[in-house]
Amino acid sequence: MQMDETPVQVMGESEREDTQQSYIWLTRGGPPEKPAVMYEYRETRAAKHIHDFLTGFTGYLQTDGYEGYNSALKSYSGIIHVGCFAHARRKFFEASKVSKKAGSAEEGIKYIRKLYEVESDLRKKKLSPDEFLAERKGLSAPILEKFRAWLDNRALQVPPSLALGKAIHYTLGQWDKLTAYLESPYLTPDNNACENAIRPFVLGRKNWLFAGSPDGAKSSCGMYSLVETARQNALDPEKYLTHIFDRCPHAKNKADWEALLPWNVKLF
Image 1 (cartoon, rainbow, N blue to C red):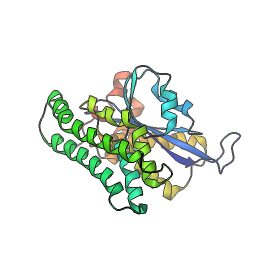
Image 2 (cartoon, one colour; image 1 turned 60 degrees about the vertical axis):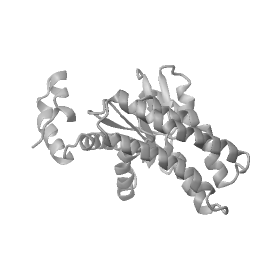
Image 3 (cartoon, one colour; image 1 turned 135 degrees about the vertical axis):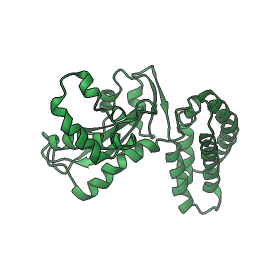
């Protein structure tokens, strides 16, 4: 499972000002051939909401470095927390723009780029999961070892108050989570698939600005979940919505509803 969250403004929330910030939480998971995306509205970004999504879940949870996930996961023993190299790389890019010493931040970016090159090359090969995992570990582990040595050395030289220092200390603080992707062939170095799924909501928000009520926010989450899950399963969202809305009134049991799930629908 992957998780992310983004702010949203919602009108008419109980005991809250209309100017206060609420959040849309997104989870993406399921078998690789049946990805599912769920948007959920909550009034805050508090870690307590994460428990709503993790009930009954065991396995890998991939997120960014938001501390709320660390706090929530202390209550679970069957979940392995996986980090996001895209966020670490972003911090080095930010540091490269303001660093006075040329090449320092770029060195960190080079290490991360090498990891992505390994990932890209291996994904193009038709390898079994076990073969992929073995080759990725064999190629990526040495890169990570050198990267870690570079980080440890630079951490002693760069103050954590500087942009480069922040990038280095963030990466070191997330190290165990960042390298956890090596343990499963179904994991990737980053949380980008989840971020890509939340992007349509972020772009839409720039146009509609706010939800008129909590019920409106919940309804929009339902629609976004349907549309984005259809898209992730290579279905045309408009055709999929037309298909299911035509058949929903006739669904009478669990089997009828399951037949309407995106991976069970064939649209021509």
